[in-house]
Amino acid sequence: MQRFMITDNSDIVRKVGKRILSELDFLVSEASNAGEALQRCQAELPEYLIVDSGMEGALDLIAAIRAMEGGKEVKIYYCVVEADLKKLMAGKRAGASDFLLKPFDRKILTAVFGNRAIAA
Image: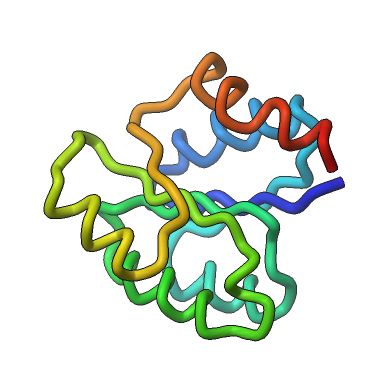
């Protein structure tokens, strides 16, 4: 089972994402801030990570994970509320693999990650 971490300040976003991704056969953990996410990643890197762009320290978290041993293999999704080119480029420069538009729902998460859980 592939490991997935959702890092977001919002309890609701984390809970909804966890429920949907768990149903797609991911082992999902949550972090409410960048510091907590970094600690969890230092203990065990997930294969997938969603990082909320509005969270303090989001870009530093992405860069720190990329600098870890095995960190370049993590698929990091920078989650944005709107397609702001400046914000998207900052995420890409920090090391984000791709982007997700928030709020996400079952349809979006299944479309993006459904086949990946099965492929593992």
